[in-house]
Length: 87
Image (cartoon, rainbow, N blue to C red; front, side, top):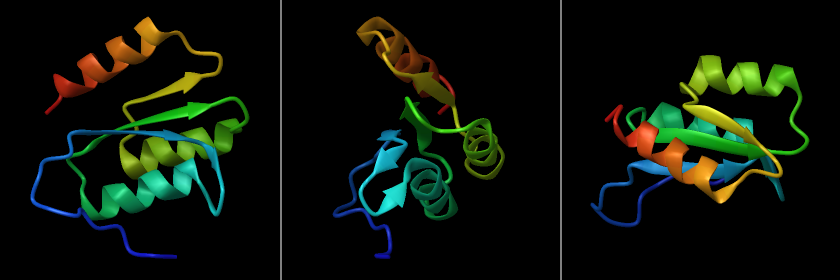
């Protein structure tokens, strides 16, 4: 697994990740992000993650919110806005 690195010095404020991705599950990815960049707000999208995976990413990566598919555009926008208020 490759190390997570920012390409430049730009500020990444929010990461929205699906749970089911090729090569890595979203909970593992967000935990890795959190270990290196704890201030980034993390949001996970899922239609398949179980409660254990969601609880794990909440505990280990300070998950801001998990949105269940099918999510609404407005719900995603409001989630990102509320996450930005935490920064």
